[in-house]
Image 1: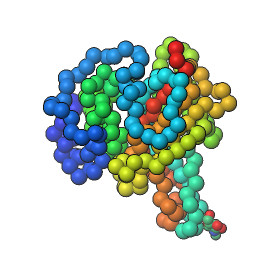
Image 2: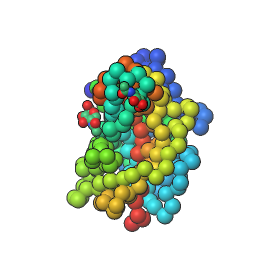
Image 3: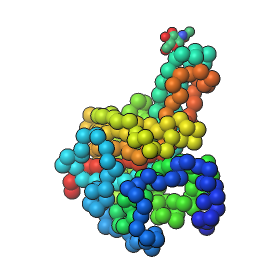
Image 4: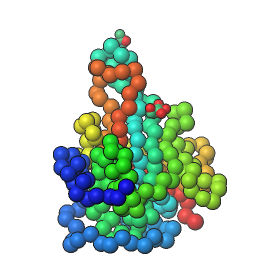
Length: 244
Ligand SMILES: *[C@@H]1O[C@H](CO)[C@@H](O)[C@H](O)[C@H]1NC(C)=O
Ligand SMILES: *[C@@H]1O[C@H](CO)[C@@H](O)[C@H](O)[C@H]1NC(C)=O
């Protein structure tokens, strides 16, 4: 499907998340599409969204991925005071880093990609059109939980064996107030620093930052909720590993 800016503009007219919150207005019109950059993301590494998480000291930025999927929760139906439990998340992860690394507009785009993608995720064809138009359509793999372990399987990345990270939470911070609160105003999930669990990760990746979150939060109580339910979210996963 051809990406229609006017169609998207009209669809998004009522969607708060489409409003970028980058550092001010971009200078002049959008730049033309850039060629594919080198495999290293050194330029983009200096544009990591500002956060208060411990820095990735001594590590190299390997991938910047857009995750679109759901955060899954459980509830005891009928218990209006119980707090929902979390059972994990499922998301498809797309390569946004390759393009952003050579995009002079990256600084202004980074802050709006997650909210925009989440807003469009209800319209798969339009989402696809948006991703295509920006060069973000390449799927790297999946994010899911292996039992209770957050897992990032980049199973579309060659050569084999593909990178896979099994991680655990190191640190967290609230998402900034300007974050997209989600399709039903659920609130943006926390930003996290996740790092390798028990040396199980492979393929030169060992640390994942969840940044630029949109939606995904659980309601405060189980009131009116089913036994299991999902909350749509999008986030950026900034993936690091040992320098090569
Ligand atoms: C409801 O949930 C609260 C908080 O988790 C718990 O203390 C309480 O025992 C639960 N009540 C019932 C009837 O399960
Ligand atoms: C989360 O929800 C998705 C979509 O229904 C489902 O496929 C997946 O198995 C669930 N995952 C977990 C960990 O609950």
